[in-house]
Amino acid sequence: MMQRLVLAADPDPDLWVRVPTSYPDTAGATPQQWARAVAADRARSTEDAAVLTRLLHDLAEHEAGADAGTVYLYLPDDGSPMQKVRLRAVPTEELGPVEPVSPLDPVEDVVDAEHLGRGTRAIVAGRAHEHTDDLLVTVVYRWELGWVTVLLTMATLDPGAAVAMLDLLDELADDVWVEDESGALVTATEVTDV
Image (cartoon, rainbow, N blue to C red; front, side, top):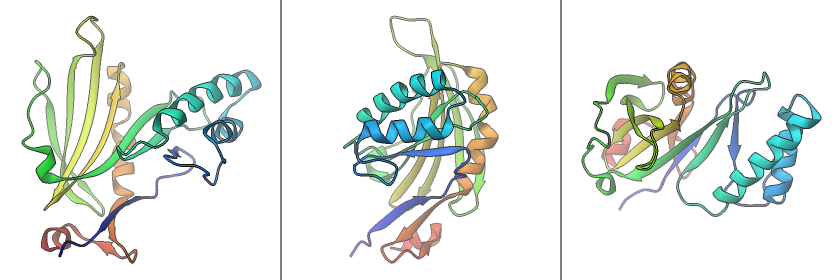
């Protein structure tokens, strides 16, 4: 019998904000209230708060009810550019083989996360859309843990931002783990054996 596993994360709250997929949430009863609360906490001015509230509300509405993992926003209070990161666990068999999605060769290396163990980090670049020349850079962390694969992804139109975020994404990866229903940490070897 297959055990139910939970993907969990505890990123630095001064840098990362989790975007809820259902409401009420601890930061607000609705997507609008959540957006206002986060903007009030993170914005540096009233004008910034108004713009940030609109952006966060749109994102919160988009993610509400979504079943595509958990979204975290890199949103420090120093005015650094906001970045959206998605964390999800999927059955390995649903992913199939890793195939290039870009005419450019991906850059791939090995990463070791504190709880998830050894995985890969790929940086893939390609056209954002067939009707534009914009370059979309996607960073994909992947840990294959037997029947479940953990993915941590970030996409941006700014190649410099992708590179600048690598150390922060490595740190976030160290704050991700898999646990069983009781909340006990499950190692990569234990996932394979389940």
